[in-house]
Length: 324
Image (cartoon, rainbow, N blue to C red):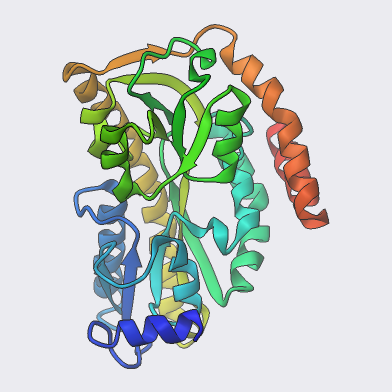
């Protein structure tokens, strides 16, 4: 039995038997309604209903309220299990998109904007291969290092177990002698309590917002960026009136960047709050950034070569765009 059959059976009691073009089911990986991510998706849903005069109604379901694993969201959209989604864990279905998350490749907001603009046509095609329309997205603040032990330089990671969300983040941890462990977000608190992991790579406004009580130290070293894609089922999107399509695209084009901006504001607020609650925030040691970039640069090339010519070309496009 394939994924589509299993998911469709599991969702019989919670979803309509057949989604209509003007009545969409949406899903997000985030289970907390107060996050910038969910607020952004909620604004999209509300604006679409208002600005299309009800021609398109989108009902948003939070993470874990439907029987769809976080890693399966893009596939669920492509299969028509849901019509619309925000997906942070898209890389298993569209691995070429992980180029944006390579450690030390993109180091600031300007580089992100240039890299995304350069690679966007490739991403649109890659999602289309999954029967998915890529409409836009948003980005979390930089992923930094939160730990249960003091960190004053990257050398202090040696011998410690760090939770990562991708093989690329894992490579970074391993370069500095750490052990990379992949866990779902729901497993992080108990894993920290039991010593299964001793740290995580996340943002202050991301995972640390929920896990800060277990993480007394934050080394403010930007490893990489994490981002979410806002996507729609291609068949459902094609069935919309062209004017509704354009309205949806325009709203996502506005609300994606607005969500990114909200995350940046929340990042500063969470850093201040976490510091006030007793977390030790340590700036990156002098020389760590240059040293890490030098260490990881060969990995960018080997990652692309191992995945094939399309990846090599995509890496070249991004590096040319950001001057690296």
